[in-house]
Amino acid sequence: MTTNYSAIQFAAMPDLPASVEPGLPHDSPAARRISGGARLPELDGARGLAALSVVIAHYFGEVDHALYGFEFGWMGIDLFFVLSGFLIGSIIMERKDSPNFLAVFYAKRSLRILPVYALILTATLGFIQLKAPEPWIANTLPAATYATFTQNIAMAWLGDRGSLWLLPTWTLAVEEQFYLAVPLLMMLISARALLPAILAGIGLCLLTRTALYLVGSDFPSRLLLVSNGHILLIGVLAAYIQHHDVRIPQLVLRLVPLASIVVFDAIILMAQVHVFLALLAPLFASYILLAARGWPRLGFLRARWLRALGAISYCLYLVHQPISGMMHGLILNGVPDIATMPQVLVTFGAIVVSVAIATVSYFLLERPFVRFARTIFYADALPRGERPDHQPLSADELH
Figure 1 (tube, rainbow, N blue to C red):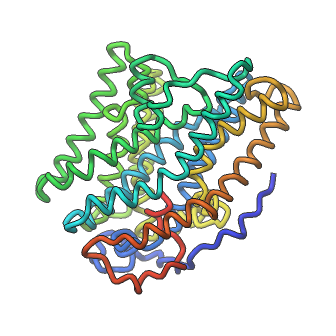
Figure 2: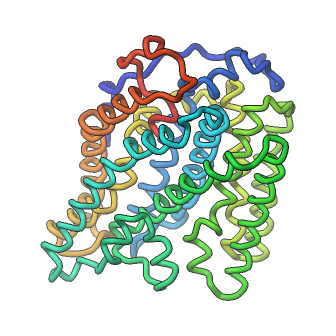
Figure 3: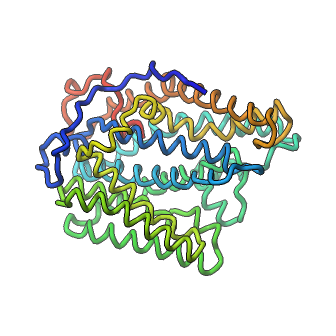
């Protein structure tokens, strides 16, 4: 399958030299790329990589006749969570002292998230209601849970994942709950206590996930904010390191991923439990910091096709399961699978259709709302004339 992404334009950003090292002044180019809200193309590429891993896993690794070794979608979810924590943490630390911080923060988040979500949710629930008697249609959770971003809590409480088409939205619910809680908490915590609070939050959430698993609540341990918050907070920790210019040698940042993989492999092989999967989060956080500091070996994340995929990743993440379910149901009268050649062809067709819909959504729905959000300013923001509307969307806006 080949898809033309050339229509999606990106801002040209010169590569930082390989000699850029940690410990940069706060007003250095590398520091401004995060705290100043400028584009960091590697984060767009990372988001595209995460979306790609989730779609491939759902289409080829989590069906009845799955391909061996393709159940890696959780890695994409963890990467999304770490990116969310990093970007939102950066925004909060940069703007939390602004008099209108909360109003502007939540307005911008709403304009970024709600229009696409509301459209896809309404269309999916409407289609399910229309075709409900069909055997390939699964029951959903109550519509109110999806509308209020509490579907993850309902799934954990009921022990029911609901419709596979809307199952990916549990991660969005976790993020929305995170967005509601963390800005308020970070505003209340003093600057001196912020780092200990972040570390304590990581430990508390990891202990909660472990405790839920040990008492037999395996399903809830995968779904709730209190059992996934450590992954998001590891991203916030990376934002803290970057924002406060914490001096960490590049060699250490390069060794953290290796240590994460070694420890992760050892524990999984011995314990065979998912509760330790979050040990890869430090790997992602380290690579984000290396990208922010211009590590040249992450240059592959600047690939145009990955950045284009990152730009459309939000809608793609939401729409790929409904599209696959609808196409397999309407064309083959069955649920998604890859056991036969017709099923494989429909699956690849679903990829094309999903990417096409996500691209249209980016241009016609997401980008106009995000550009409108640019007219809403933090009280301490730069004058509007310094950030023209035609400037490509920055990393936090694409998130």
